[in-house]
Length: 285
Image 1 (cartoon, rainbow, N blue to C red):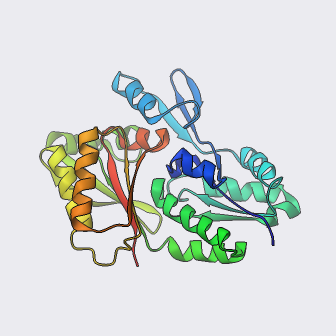
Image 2 (cartoon, one colour):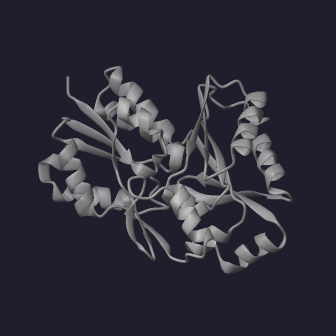
């Protein structure tokens, strides 16, 4: 039986313990600030980047690994595995898929041993797919079978989150100045959703942000009868313990998930969404 490795980008936001237990290698993204260039999760955290920006820092550019870095990463992984499934953040929000596939071209025949999957998602939306890939690997599925399942599964994953305003999205070029100004002027809170790999505006919540967060949870979970109840991720960018607890309690009220996993967003995700952003990510039947 071939040894199959599951690898991914660091922005999957899965707990370090899970990655370690299941031997999942990650490749690091970078954040460049006015003080230097740092590897996400290894040299900089979501708390670090938000504190920096809240104190007046203006530059916080995120970047995916280069094709050369992906090549080195894949070559190291192939020392342990015969084939690799690499699950990337959506190609519509990052160049990671492009660079990872470019790396395969540089690797010759070894590149044929690697399946690069465009997840269409970010954060723990990717996480759901990674967990499924691990389950299939451990059950003896082939790399081709896992890759096919990933292409099918990505259409069923729901990745969404609510942000306090569009300010951080504006800072990183993902929203216009007019949109940022309107959301702040009228206390509007965008709910963003990954649709066919693209980040789109799903709805807008108004008023007090803490109440808006709970409205968002209610709208996502209350009437959705298609949700697979196996697992829910609650992923957040430096939210308070109370906010996370309230969100978890409300989720438990509306849906009987087998498990609810709370994770912190990566510095890359947090730097784009801003403090207080929080999402519920699940899989539909």
